[in-house]
View 1 (cartoon, rainbow, N blue to C red):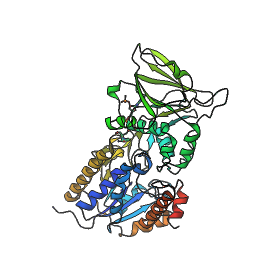
View 2: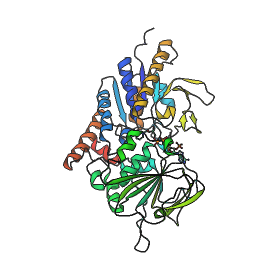
View 3: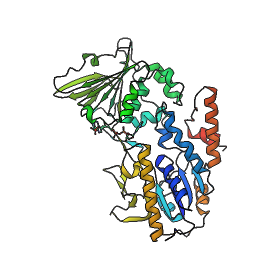
View 4: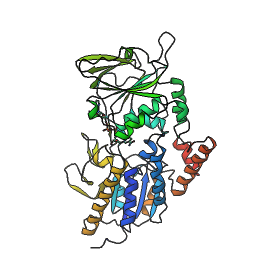
Length: 430
Ligand code: NAP
């Protein structure tokens, strides 16, 4: 059977899975698509998460931008879906659209649940990455210990985990700041990294190197950072853990050290991180450090009104079809990407994931299981404009983009990002 005419779809989130879902929706259906994002700027994890020294990866946004210009697409950014007074609820979305796709990613970090995790100087990769990528609302970087003459800073950071995010964080922390200065890294981060001069990053893997979570390409790329050595210590029984870990790192060299078979037990410090206690094999070791970054995976942020699996940190779904808490499919409700499967797989994996769920939606539309909306086509835009003070559409998004690029050109960088929503709203012409 043919697809019903005049389908109206809402898509929440403009990260990789949202972008690829939009492409499939436009290619494979005649639907009108309203795209919503909580930030004024689109891109989700591509803007907020991809490392500043990986500009090539961000090229995918150019393709998404072409989709946003399609006459069948309405962009509404700076609009949050939730239950707050100036937010749009999931029930309102279901009421105004024939189908709603949630492509909201996984923006919260998992926890280690060890003592000392709350100490200043202990942070999540989520917060650290958002800080150096200029994400609004993360103005404060980690309070790195500056040290004193009697008790100098160690110049060492410890990253828990060996996934690609851990490698991103390690590269950014240890890279010579002059290399980062040509990227779109937030100035707030660059300034502190210059001052702090982290020159040793220790990554902790709880299993052996063969079980490390990074991909081979990202691992190899570490040895291409100018002036940075990479070392691997397999912390099995009998292997010496360098005693140098107990004191400040050698300021004469920059290095990344993988310490495998190592499980963090406690983060120690008097009001501020000073060291981390690690069990390697049968032994316990103390590594002096100013900063501990846990990079052990993400969780989605729940949205009131959409059933959530708290154990897995994802929205309840059966292969991308949303369910309620009792497991019943919610007609016309879909979830994509990390919010559907959990935080694994790069951009390519999310493309496949999003495309597949849009195909399932097409099957559902053909078989008549969608509940068609009775609302007038422009009712949703009116609701949003009444509820949200500063809605930004495609033109506003473009204006922000142009201004950021122009600021970048003046400094020989791809862009200088706005780091506050109010600045973005201003640049969008409000
Ligand atoms: P990840 O690849 O799942 O790595 C998570 C790491 O945390 C693993 O090393 C894991 O070790 C460790 N871990 C989990 N719980 C732990 C605990 N309680 N104590 C100690 N270690 C623990 O996750 P990710 O690095 O956040 O990356 C997410 C996805 O994005 C991945 O698919 C990644 O490839 C992709 N990505 C790709 C790029 C790229 O440049 N291509 C960049 C960034 C991210 P175990 O294996 O022992 O559980």
